[in-house]
Length: 180
Image (cartoon, rainbow, N blue to C red; front, side):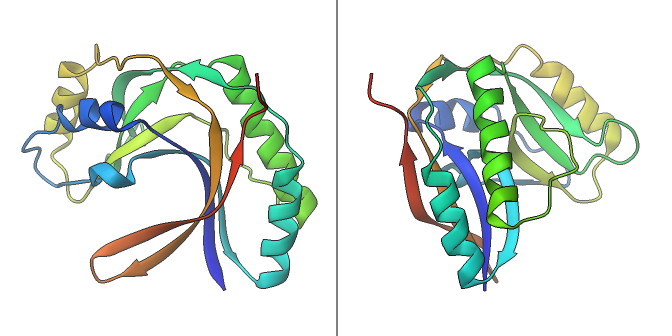
């Protein structure tokens, strides 16, 4: 049984740009720089048969490389107690098309459809007992955050293993874009 997700990795310099806005925000557990990524689909626990089907279906996706950039900082949920601090993305149409193709591949492989609306973001911190006013202030202070544009040339199927130090992410398969 493997816990899976599908994601696009960020370039190291973009990860450093995200790390540069970290602060001593009360209640924030910052995502380690090497684990920053754009989740396109959380799959969850899967058996070997579903994993094989998923690899096959994802392999049939053809997509061009495309450029994107990070824009702004916010938190989920928008009302109530904040739990996730995120950096947003300018969502170019090719990203939305790729995510939709991945969703369709997951369903064809045998997963249930994801009922949540795709909201492209990079989780930068998880919040435990946060001071809502401090989270709002952090988001306002970093609302103008922008990364340099970067190319997306592949997506990855990841396994996530939980241990006492958090999650360990392992790439199971990489799916490159179409050659240009």
